[in-house]
Image (cartoon, rainbow, N blue to C red; front, side, top):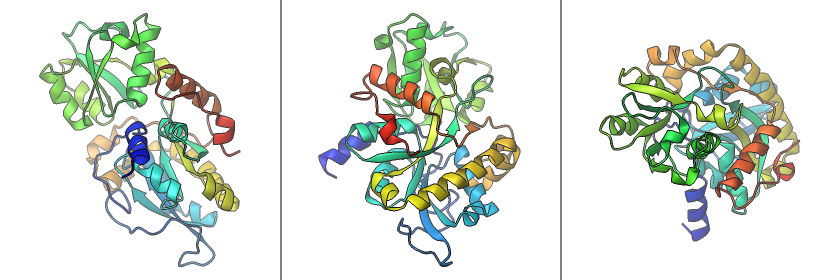
Length: 332
């Protein structure tokens, strides 16, 4: 791997709740891979697209679009390719191995900041604006940590550094009057976090569902808060994106994809129980856990205002060299 790609992969690690290893096909392991292109599929009337996703709960909406025939209705034969981290999808999209991917917008911004020509095609999912969110920060009940500024000098575990976890926690702490430079972060996989919190190796943990609910089931743990809601209300957690080259060469395919998203995501949002029911097969999630899972908000419209705030925040804390030019990044 050359130095440029190594730097990109280090800097563009996406918010990933991944529960399974890297692989291709559907998240549960079925399906096959193929070259991402706009070439005809076995049905010559359809355009084949290999689409990259993370094996996490919100990605199930794409599978719903496949199962319901919405993609076919819009002339697309969509095949899923799963990746354990969004950073791995970025070079695959850049080289055309993947036509489109669903991932964290901050990783897309980081890729552009590093010189890659990436385009945001549509919105996809957002943090819940109020009430219970799909990720949060947990501390021990006896920790003495009662507010965001109490994290000064403390160590918070995140799944990857310089992503939405530490970014939103730093902003939350600053809003509470603390110096975000005084916060400490430790990178570790989500499944390991609760044990490390119990042992006192970290003081707080930033984690998504289903780990959030599992940790809160322990009477010795309490929720500190939802940093996404503190930092940016309606924080965009995932968008759909492609390469500038693919978008330029396949405008009709991009238009069809956007139209399909505009039809699929409102259905998923309106009936989250139907989406939850698919999770045991989709990502091998326990059926009982899936039933009570807090889901993110699905929204096909590109959240320009929130993405602008995210880019400004990432530049403010040095995650990006400069705030991105969203006018050139977003496909209208």
